[in-house]
Figure 1 (cartoon, one colour):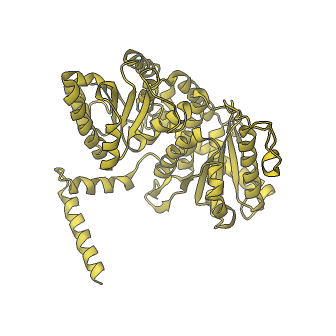
Figure 2 (cartoon, rainbow, N blue to C red):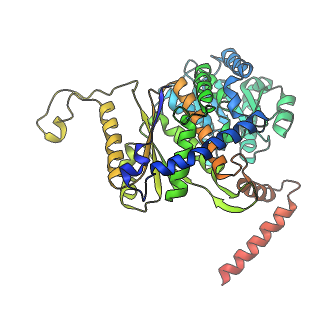
Figure 3 (tube, helix red, strand yellow):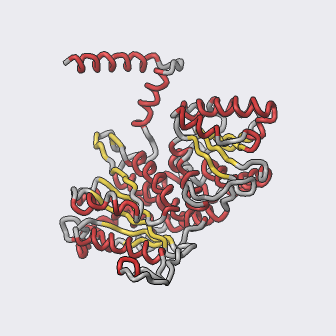
Length: 465
């Protein structure tokens, strides 16, 4: 496996027993970790959760690949309409494989760009549409429920925009990803004859990056989804092994759970030292927060658990956040995401100019510098007794990215088992959605309209004192 997990700086040998894990603490937790593996495996085998099966769905991967091949050359922009898990996976894949936005280079029908409309800010949506041409835009609308207000509203605008310019031919410029047999988006897709791909019922949005949700935009923008899924498939095989020395996802889950619950590190900083992995950090924040932030455990006991994920970009955020990380509250654990070998070195000219602040860098590379910056930050945090660990991808390509994304999903699921919570529901998100439906006049949400009115009355009284 070309992905490595280094936990040394999580241990008491490096940062002391107050903040670091002892050999005894780790050893004692091994049984619980293996039980978490067994429990999750039973649920997957029963069909309750489906993301581990996605990299092996050859029919879906083939269908998406053939769709992208058939459409190739007819567009210069792929416009994804989705939110949360329906957008962040596509964003992570695009940043990693094609370069961080906005430095991907000029776009064309041979190198189409990705535009993601993941918000309903009217200026953002209107400004984005103004940069696109209907005839050369392929819209991918993604909504598992088929009724996500943000995605449906933006798609309504784009649908009218396409039809005004293209008439009946507009349907050829739309691909839908939604649940099979349910939801108004599915009904519309059937009526309009849009090409449609389905998300399995047992795969939630934040675990859907390797389903059609992530693969359709990826394939349409030229990413090799077969290699992506091959890497994920190999990581899946490793993630079922009852051996903590080779099961990276389980070992990472075990140690992160211990650092959080035994040492009080309630914040995890995902710290990629690669701009190409910055989109993955945004994807990870949803995965970790929405999966592990729960009010109750499986027994119905109120636990209000959750570890807050924070994204930091190396080396950029060494100059904006690290002061807090070094000297602020000792409530954080840091996970560095490293790249073993960058595709480009960034050679610094050899010529010296007679100034020490410049000359010691002459003839070196940006690759060496960013690696030195990461190692230095890890060493400095360790001296301050701040727990940190490192996941290293030998390089950033489809195979490694697929494996890394699958590792993070398995790690999240395993931590959910260790916490005895359902990492796959999201009740906390639903209440806000229901209030929104009520405020927008959707039928069937009168009770929530009444509750919101009571909220406003209470707010009025509070303001009056």
